[in-house]
Every structure is written in C-alpha cells, then in structure tokens.
Amino acid sequence: MSLYGYKLPALSSLILWALLWEFVGRLGLTFFIPPFSEVMVTLVGLIPTPAFLNALWVTSYAFLAGVFFAIVLGIPIGILMGKNRIVDELLLPWVNIFLSAPLTALVPVLMVLFGFGTKTVIITTALFAIWIIILNARAGVRQINRSLVEMARSFGASPMDAFVKVYFWAALPEILGGVRIGVIRAVKGVIIGQLLISIVGFGALFELYSSQFLMAEFWAVLIVLFGLAFALSEFLAYLERKVSYYAASR
Amino acid sequence: MQPIEPETRQAVTDSAVSVRNVSKVYGDVQALKDLSLEFPRGELTSLLGPSGCGKTTLLKIIAGLLKPTSGEIEVNGERVTGPGPDRSFVFQDFALLPWASVLRNVAFGLELRGVAKSEREAIAEKYIREVGLAGFEKKFPHQLSGGMRQRVGLARALSVNAQVLLLDEPFSAVDEQTRRKFQEDLLELVKNEKKTFIFVTHSIEEAVYVSDQIAILLPRPSRVSEIIRPSSFRDKSVDNIRRDPEYLDIVDRIWASLRSYVE
Image (cartoon, rainbow over all chains, first blue to last red; front, side, top):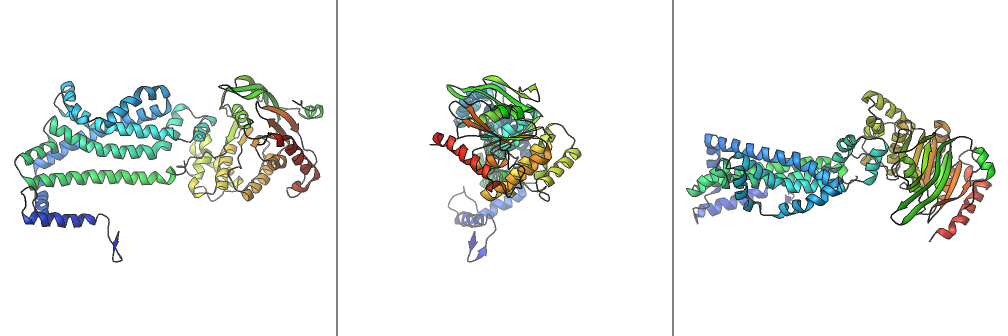
C-alpha cells in the first residue's frame, strides 16, 4: 500500500484501527472498551506475571499437542484416501460431516468420554484441525501428475520411496495450505476446550477477566492470542511461498 | 494385414524386444489386437500412426506400466512382468521432479536404485554434459525451457544405462526448431550409444527422419499394417536426409496409407 507516493510498511492499517480504538475508548462510552493505550500498558504489566506465563504454557502445550496429532494423523490419512479408493469411499462422508459439524456441540460428549482434563482439550483441538488437513492432503495427492507416478514406477521406485520421494513432495503445497487453515482452527479449538472443559490456560483468564469486568486485561489477553495466531499463520504462509515455485509447474 | 516382408525378416537377426500376439482391452474397447512386432537391437524403431491407434498403449505395455490382456513381451529373451532396469522411459511431458535440481532429476533413476550419492552424481554430470546442459546442474525445471527440460528427461533415461530406451512422443511439447535439433541429436545418440530405441510419434517426417525401422499402426483395433526400413539415406549427413528421394517417397507413401484414417 502507498500513500501520497510513500510506501507504507505492512500492517500499517492496524495503526489506524488502534487510533480509532483509542478515540472511542477515551470518549468513555462504555466500560467494555477501555482506551487502547490502557490495554497496552496492562498487557506489558500482565506478561511477566506467573498467572499469565502459566496460562501461556498450559495453552501452548494443549495447542501444540493437538496440532501435532492432527498433522501426524491427518496427512497420512489424507494421502491414503487420495491413493486408495476403498479407504476414500469409507472415510470421505465422515470427514465432510465433521468438517462442517458444529464441533462445540460435541464437546460435552467428549467430556463424558475422556473426562475433564488436558487430554480432552487436546482431543478437541485436534478435532478442530484434522479434517481440513485430511481433505487438503487428499486433494494434493489426487492432483499429482500421472506421468510422475509412472516415472517413479518405471524407474523401479518401491512404494515407500514413491511415497517419501515423490507423492509427499508433489502434494506438499496443498498439504501446507491444509495445515495452515487447520492450525488457525486449532486456536479456536484450544480456547473453546479451555472455556468449556477444564477452566485452565487462556480460557480460564478470559473467564476470570470477563466475569470480573476487567476489560483491559481481557483485551490484552485477546491481543496476545491474536498476535500468536497471526504469527503462526504467517509463518506457515511463508513455508507455502517457499514451495510455490513448483506448485504451478507440477 | 500385410505381413513383414521376407527380406526384412532376414535383416532382423537379433531382437532386443519382441512383442508377441499382444492384445489390450479397456472395458469394451479393443485397443490392441493380436499385435506382433520385433525391435532389432541397436536400432531405432518408430511406432507411427494416427491418434488413437494405441501406439502409446503399446509403449507402456513394453515398459511394464500396463499389463497386456493377452500375449507377451520379451526383452533380451526375458519375459516382461513389470518395469525393469533393462528399460527406461522418456515422457511426453518430461515428468521431472519440480522441487529437485537438474542434477538430482538426472540422478533420480540411480537414486531409486540405491546408488551412492557421489557415484550417481558423477554419472549424472557426465550425461548432463552429453545432452548439452553443462552449467545447468543447479537449476530447477521451472527455470528451463521446454526443450531443456526434455534434455533432462533424456539424460535421466540414459544415466540408468538401460539397453532399451522408450520414448513417448518426446519432442511433441517442444517448438519446431528445438525439435529439429533434437532429431539430429537423436541420430547421433543412436549411433553412439548402442542402445535399442523405441520411439512413438505422430509426425510422419520425424519418424522417417530418425528411424531405422518404421512400424505403421492402424487403429480400431490396432494392428501393424506395414513395416518400412529406409535403406539409402540412413548413412547420409543430417543435412542431406530431407532432400533424399527415398526419404520423400517414404513420407508420401506413409501419408497415402494413413490419409483415410485421419478425420
């Protein structure tokens, strides 16, 4: 973006929104929106506190574990579905149902099945992320050029070699796209899990601050969460760009 | 169906590849019917015919990528049951790994056979030079022109040192001038490499220009209608082939027999 010939750095539109927030906050219309500057001061004060660091650790742990399982299960299942018609016929309806299902409504069922601990939060997180990862890995494998498959066969590739040296890389642009969207959904999953299942981590902080009307703290934690999710998503988009040079010429 | 001419049969002393009574049925479509053909060792045989005549199907059956419905293929006297190290394939759309450098692409056939990295890269470098791509080892396929990509595909097929090279319309995706250069280089290659080449094309001129033997395939169901062995211009220099009277006669004769099959 450029303004009067000056090139503006990325995200400079956020400055405008922050100014608007500050202005609305200073008008004092509602306790719900404290000035942006107050939120930022609270944020800086909040970060070193044990409560915050503990919440960050608990949430990160559940989030990373959930994303880990979603990726290590989702990618092979997706590749298998793309390569094998029987597996595809069996699983595709379920994947599509769960992709569009309101998973939040399933959380009570998960609590009955797996209890009220971190395990259930991890499962909820994985369930939010895994379906789109499966679908994208499947789509990636299905679009692999037939002659690449024949090339691997004609030069005597074992099934494992073909999988590791050809199929995975040929599907990688789609797989990374799926992981990026899956990770964003996992952020939702982990917070919903921590709000509904076990009141720990950032979920507990949200619960605490909103019930006591500590709006500056509430917004500060939300901004931290937005920042983390945004950074993650940008990192994965960066990886996607790294492979985009061959995505168009497969 | 016209049988192989007697004098041709005598010339065929040693076959690298034999196709015997091969049929291929897709659903209720008969793609190939009872097709037999011999491929003399060290020569280039073209499979020429109108589109839909099953020439690529036949090539993929020889490669072991497709199974014939009946009949058998022998390479050096051994029956083909699948892909094998005695044959390598050059693809119409190159089939390069877009995420790998020219060097890794050329060495990929050897990589799949478990050849050590330094050894396979030394071999690959030799063939990269041979196809005229020296200096491009570190480039990626998307940085090369279509013609250069096919040179990579050719170098990959050569580097595994298979006795039989199967080329599926290798020059159809490159421009006319590059194509002519390729045809001249191919003649050199056949002369120097002592390999058996099986070459699928739909260009009459190309087939006559590069081949020691041309098998004309006619469609629905596919069968070999004629085998032509040019005699007089094969030893001439590349510049004189296209004005040789026999070259021109054969091109005309093939067109006359194919004309009625072209919509």
